[in-house]
Length: 237
Image 1 (cartoon, helix red, strand yellow):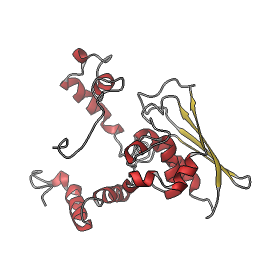
Image 2 (cartoon, rainbow, N blue to C red; image 1 turned 30 degrees about the vertical axis):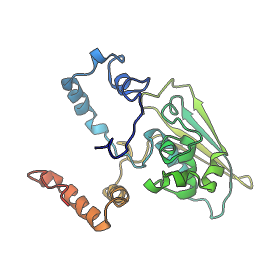
Image 3 (cartoon, rainbow, N blue to C red; image 1 turned 120 degrees about the vertical axis):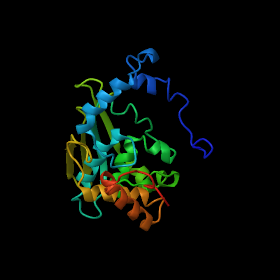
Image 4 (cartoon, rainbow, N blue to C red; image 1 turned 45 degrees about the vertical axis):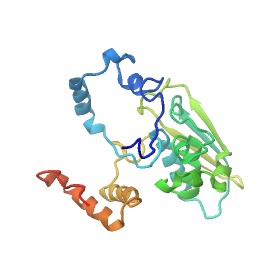
C-alpha cells in the first residue's frame, strides 16, 4: 500500500553500510541477527530510557536544535546573527548527510538546516520540512554562516546517542555573542516532556492530517488506552 501510494526508500536500506543488517545485526552478519528472545531482553532493559522525538527530523540534530532555540530565546527583536559556530562529537553527521538540502526530505537530514530553521522559525514543525520551506531565503542565508566542527576526543559516536552534545555559539552584529551547550535533548529520558508538551506535539502532527476535532478525540482515546479492554475501534473514524 505504501509503494502504491508513491512512498520510496533507500535501495540500500537493508544491506548498505548503514542498513538494517549492519545496524541491528551482530557484526553485520545475517546469520547472527538477534533472536526474538534477545530482542525482548534488549527492549525490556531499554524501557526506562525511552523518550519522545520532539522534532520531525533526524534525531541526531535535536541537541543542536535545542541549543539554537535556547540561544535565541532572549535575543532582542531585530538582532542580526553574523556567524555561527557549532561543535558536535565525531559521528554526529553520519546520518546528517545533506549540508545543502534540495528537498524537504533532505532537510530532515541536514544539520545546518536544522539549526538555521530553529533560529529563523522557532520550534521545527512538519511544515518546515517541505520543498518550498527549504528554499526560504532567510534560512538559506543563515545556513551559509554556520561553521560545524566535529570533536574526535570521545571517538566515533555515530552508533549511539550516549555522550553526544551540541555546543553552539552565535556571533551577533555589534560584537555580542550567545553560547549554549546542550547534553540532553528535550524529550529524552533525562529531559522528559510534560504531558502538556506531549499533547502539543501530538496535535501539531495529527492536526496536519486530521480535522482538529478528530485529532482531539483521538488524543483523548489514546490517553485512556491503559483502561481500554480492547484496542478494537481505537482508530475508528
